[in-house]
Image (cartoon, rainbow, N blue to C red; front, side, top):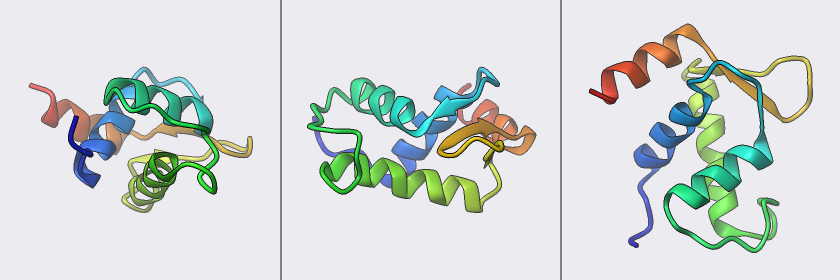
Amino acid sequence: MVKPTSGQIQIEILKILKDGNIHTKNEVVEKTAKYFKINIKSTNSRIDPFAKDVVRQISVVRKNEWLKNPPQKEKFAITNTGKGIIDLMVL
């Protein structure tokens, strides 16, 4: 498969988070890689280039206020704005 775009990765991140549960960074990286059928060596963004892309897009999604960080380190949950965005994208 062709390398996914930043936007495609962002949409997949929001789909993963849409259930409203808190997810770890590693879980989001693994599920995103699985969705795009990309084999990753590690969920560590210093080791694997795709993991680095996903972590970078997590940061973009957070800056857009589509996800939030609960008090636990490296865990994420979707915001109401993020839910609205993904609901619009997935028709």
